[in-house]
Every structure is written in C-alpha cells, then in structure tokens.
Image 1 (spheres, rainbow, N blue to C red):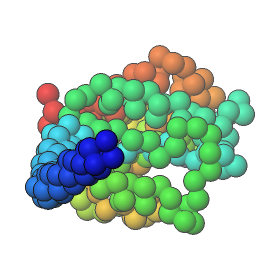
Image 2: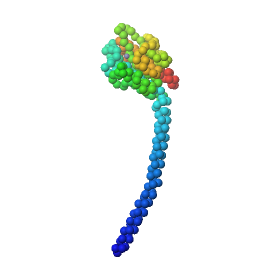
Image 3: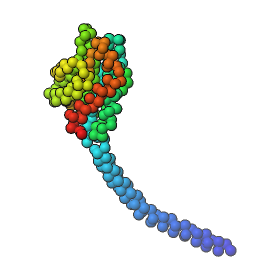
Image 4: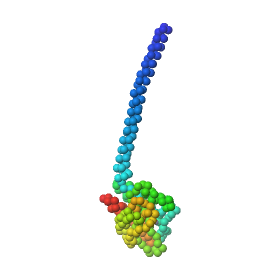
Length: 243
Ligand SMILES: [Zn+2]
C-alpha cells in the first residue's frame, strides 16, 4: 500500500514536472509571439497614424480654406456707441455670427471666430492676429461699425494694410458696399494692428456709421445683417474662387 502510494505520488510529481516543462517550452514561443504582436501593433499604429494624417488632410486641415471672422471689440470694450446708445461690439458679434453660419455651410471652408460671446480680447497682447496666425488661417475678416461726431455722416469703407490683402479688400468691399446701399467710401490703407500683425490676407470692414440714426436703425435689423452677411460670404467665395 505505502509503496503504491509513493509511486503514484512520484507519478503525479512527474506529470506535474512534465506539465511545468511543457508550459515553459510553450512560453518561449509565446513570448516571442508577444514581441511580434508588439511590433505588429506598432506597425498598425503607424498605419493608423498615416491614415489619420490622410483623413485630416482630406477632411479638415490642409485642403480646406481656414477663414477667421473677427467680431470687433467685446467685453469691457464696447467700441463705438450708436445714435440710440447701441454698442458696436453687439452689432459686430451679431453680424459675424451670421457670416459664420453661412460660411460653415461651404464644404471647402473651415470657419473660425476670434470670439463668439461678449468677451474682451486684449489688443495689447495681440490676441486676435495671434489666433489667426497660430491657426495658419488663409483669410481674416474683421467686422466693425464706424463712428463720427457728425451724425449725418454715412457710408461703407474697407481697410487693408499688407499688400497681400489688397485684392481681398477690393473684392469683399465691392460686395459689401453693394449690400449696404450706403455711400461707397472705398478701400483704404490703414495700420490697424489686426491688419498689420496678421500674416495672411486680412481686411477690416466698417459696415456703416452707427452714429447715423437712420443707418443705425437699419444696421440693427436682422434683414440688413442677413444681406450683408451674404455679401461677405459671396466676397469670400469670389476671392477663393469657390463656385
Ligand atoms: Zn470698431
């Protein structure tokens, strides 16, 4: 009896040993398998990274025109005060939002806003041009309303500074001046920092004088703003040669 038990214990030990050895033998190739798996997954990662690059080029990044819409002023900088006491910063945000919505519908364009709420963007820190430069924007359009001490003064004018912006300013101005119906005051060169510090073609639109009571009343209507927003969209499309 005792001997039998010992043998069977020995047998069990042998079996366990065999199992242990076979596990060790198995582990070696499986270890190298896991190495292969690692390098395979690395390759997959590289492939998927390249796929990401491709898809970002095709869908969002480099193939699309990046257009920055800049509603002038904001926060504790109200801009001009209108004849009725309206703030330029509210007009610019309202119009810019309409332009944004229209440009968003164009598949070739990726549109951005420097602000989409009533916030202050430091001119001293050059927040607006930096935003567009860092983004690698293709176009920059700053939206403003004009002011003058004489309330009878009226008109639409467009500004540029760098020479690479003149063509953009001319094209946008042609569309906007037609849409406002105000006196056409032309395209002018001025060293506004948003025009001077932006590296891409940039233009600043003075849509109309909100110090003129009649013009202000028009400018604050949805209909006027929709019409001007459409004219800016058409100007952008003409400049970028989008059908
Ligand atoms: Zn302004």
